[in-house]
Structure formats: structure tokens, C-alpha cells
Length: 145
Image 1 (tube, rainbow, N blue to C red):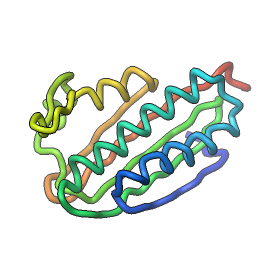
Image 2: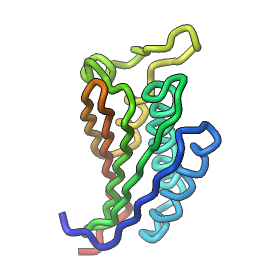
Image 3: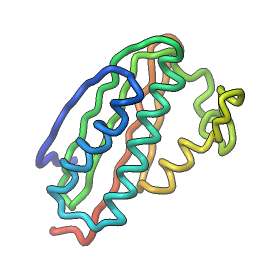
């Protein structure tokens, strides 16, 4: 994985920062000259990941969300979203469509499925009591090799 450029940001797990997060990542991704649909895909995936941090990881509390975005050789974007929240006891179960830990809040349980459908790859690592790391990658347009 050859890194051509990188950015890192961190912010409080407040719902009003969700828009900031997706805008920051999309502004960075714009360096790859993506199409409108590609930017929409990135926006949606980042929004879902950050919302998961706010709603699930830090439920009823506040913490930091960290995002690292990298432009990789081959016109690919790498996005890592990390929290130090409660963690996910069963990642495999959490990634099943319609599974939610907040059904009383009318959550659809589609966050991971949405991320997976808009990105080329999705990896989720979590430790209960220590937090979760979501890593996504997407190749944009035609790679300049």
C-alpha cells in the first residue's frame, strides 16, 4: 500500500459533527477527481460509520472520533474511522443487515450493509470496552498506473 497523501482529524462524538466528518473526507477525496456518484458513495459510507460511533459507541456519553484518510497509488482512497467507545461484542452479528442494538430508537440496522455496498472493501475490528475501528477502501475512476 503506497501512500501518496494523508490527512487525520479528530472531533467530539456530537451529532452536529457528522456533517463535518463527511465533508472533510470528501474534500480530501476530491484530490482524486472522483465522479459525483463516487463522492456520494464516500459521503454515505463515512456518514454511516460516524453515526455508528455517535449512536452506539458513545451512547449517552461523549468521546473522540478519529478519521485517517489516505490517497493510495492506483487512485484508491483508504478511510479509517476509530472510536474508543464500548466496542462490539459480536462483529459478525453486528454486520448482519437489520441487526441493531437500538431498536427502540427506530434504527434500521443497515449501517454496515450500506458501508459495504458503497465501498470496495470494509473491515471492522472491535474490542469490548476499548472501541472499534472501521476501515474502508474504494478505487475511484480509472487508475493512473
